[in-house]
Length: 235
Image (spheres, rainbow, N blue to C red):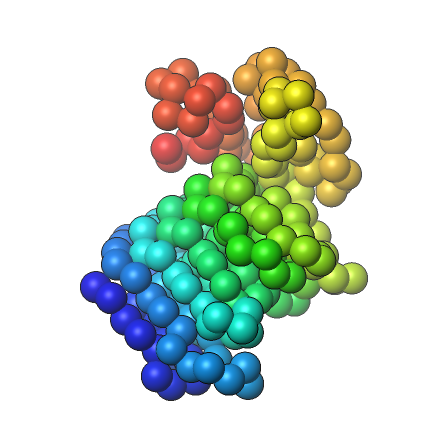
């Protein structure tokens, strides 16, 4: 399914606002922002605004913003003030601004938990992150494997961490100048700590990532579905 936006907001599933429950949805194809002006235009694969629950949903669609780098883009939704859990973005996100692999903006009451971004965010613009473009809410137990490039306010988890925002029990991988891989973990208290490539595949790191949760959320990648790096229990 390919969609070209000709109104202020567009998405692959429902155009504006979800305040109910969306579960087990997969979106394929291409979604393009066809509006030349900035204003309030925005695109996402599932919905523009989520104040409900999105669970076990996956975006495979490519999302393309405007050529003048205006208009927000979220892999699953643009604005989140609800809950998004156990969901994945594989789609590449290009052009636009305030780009996020899962959401463009995670708002103060929003929670993103057990979500993954594999999609690349390659264009040279501002306010972009592997999970959210900006975060004023809670991001926990998430990881990003996609490449995130840009200019200002760019991060592998979030591009802009606002005063009320929190990131914990989440990780991403970073390629160093010598082409070796290092891991970056936001621990349970929200502190960002570096780990070597070997340490990222250890039981010690699984324990650190699961800290503060009664049940295990991460596990070792025994089936090599994530190149040996931590995966979720449901994967």
